[in-house]
Length: 110
Ligand code: HEC
Image 1 (cartoon, rainbow, N blue to C red):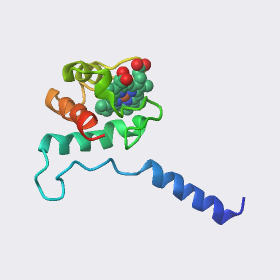
Image 2: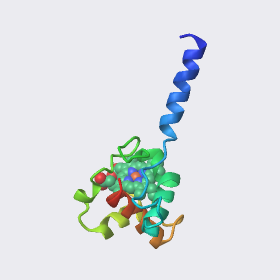
Image 3: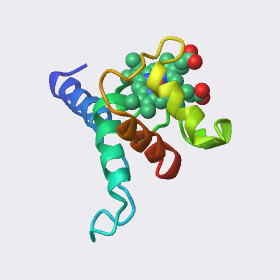
């Protein structure tokens, strides 16, 4: 491969992995639910690296339509709080409200 091609490929890969998470509806006019805005921030920092910015999956499973597998919000919050399988729990890093916020973001925005 010619050197500038390799560089373009590298930029494309970096661009894809740094894509920002989907915005919360109303974020641009200030009418967004602040919990969802905080949830999106946490998602970008703590979850997107494994689940993909848009939640379509990567090292971890896709979380698109995750609310179908977890009809009860609290059950999904528990998975993220305590961890499951090879996913670490996040209780030491975020408080319960923040964990609920990021889970709501996955259910309501992704
Ligand atoms: C180190 C990689 C990694 C990170 C970071 C990570 N996850 Fe996961 N996640 C996984 C893996 C792997 C699984 C599958 C675990 C299993 O059941 O074996 C998973 C499973 C889940 C599940 C359950 C999915 C299902 O269908 O049962 C949810 C919900 C979830 N993650 C949410 C999150 C949230 C929210 C964050 C950020 C706070 C996060 N994850 C961060 C790797 C990760």
